Length: 337
Image 1 (spheres, helix red, strand yellow):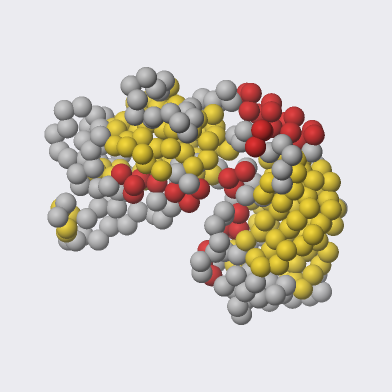
Image 2 (cartoon, rainbow, N blue to C red):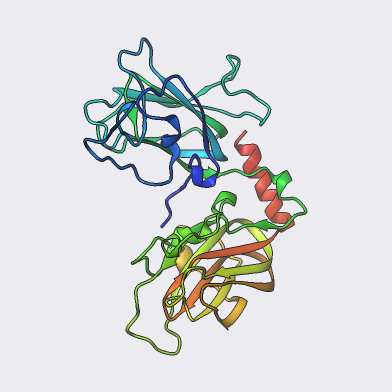
């Protein structure tokens, strides 16, 4: 449950701003949130339809694509995914990073592209994860393939590094994945991944939320639970629980607890004491957004307990970072420059 956020995904605002060539497959496919797919024998005017970025044959030099990250941050792993590209995948790839402002042109020859991932051979029809040790914050990536060919997806897994100036004096949705909120533990992910509840968008169907299996051991305190950590200690003032599209299978009740602790090697998230009642046990409406006014100081994580089981589409925790929390954000920012 601790996989890093895909900083490049279109789901968080990423964009492919330029590419050297896209004769067979358009560059925008690189950052689609959905998994790649392929239907053999399907053709259009470009040739066989591919779910990815594919360049023409016999490129005189390696082709490239430039991606603006939806969430600037520190990279941990870049996955050059060549699934469904078998006889037409690139032989290798190199990844560069740059930190630019919104006014900068990422295609300008003066851009300082720094090596993020060294030249790496690529396997056909496979994930190709490449570890990144560079601790700097980046806003753009440049994928350079060693030959012509096709890449289905580029995933840039890492940690958001928000500008502390954007958090100072304002209310922030600290639970949001784009702001560094993370799912640290979940009791059940039978029907869907609990990370969906941190998405920035509105749910569009029942499949875009978190749904646990039906429990058969129902008692007075039977519940499923999910733990959401924040990037920095926060004074919470609003909690939103959204059950949109869960009409007949929404969780019946919810309770939200908070903690001021941080995990260590001896005490992981699930072992911490969540003893601050942020939202007392409350009945939930089905297929509805419910907003709770709260007053909980210096909270580092919340545990949402859903009674007894069922579905929740989104959880949003809003508040202002504490002074100590802002100081931690500034340290994080300066360390990534």
